[in-house]
Every structure is written in C-alpha cells, then in structure tokens.
Length: 65
Image 1: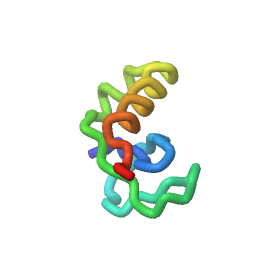
Image 2: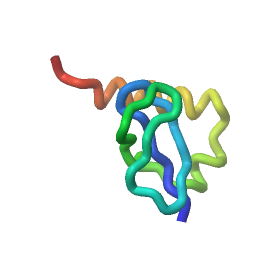
Image 3: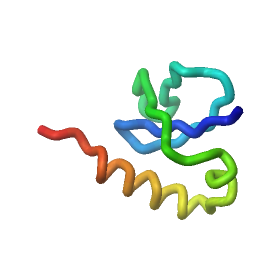
Image 4: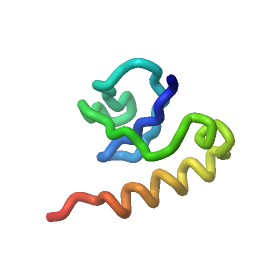
C-alpha cells in the first residue's frame, strides 16, 4: 500500500510503500509525518494543488514558539 508523507519542516511530500521511518530528502528532516491523504487522491492532484495542500498543512501544523 502506497502512503503519502509530508515533511513538518519544509512541507515536501513523499510517497513510500512499506517504510514507517521516512526522512525528507529536501531538508534532511529525520522523520516525516503521515499525511491524511490517500495515494489515489495524491496522484489526481496537480503540482499546484499539492503545493497548496502542503502550504495549508504547514500553516495548520506550524510549531508553536
């Protein structure tokens, strides 16, 4: 089963199949977060829609200072 992960630091999204420990290749964050999006929905999205999703996710989950 394909799963979509998102980086809590930079918002980069990555698809993996069997891994639970997923690192970000863009900013080197050691642990990405499982996104609440299924693989089918992800594949139907355009690059712009994926960027909008990522930006929204980061805004909602931004770290509290």
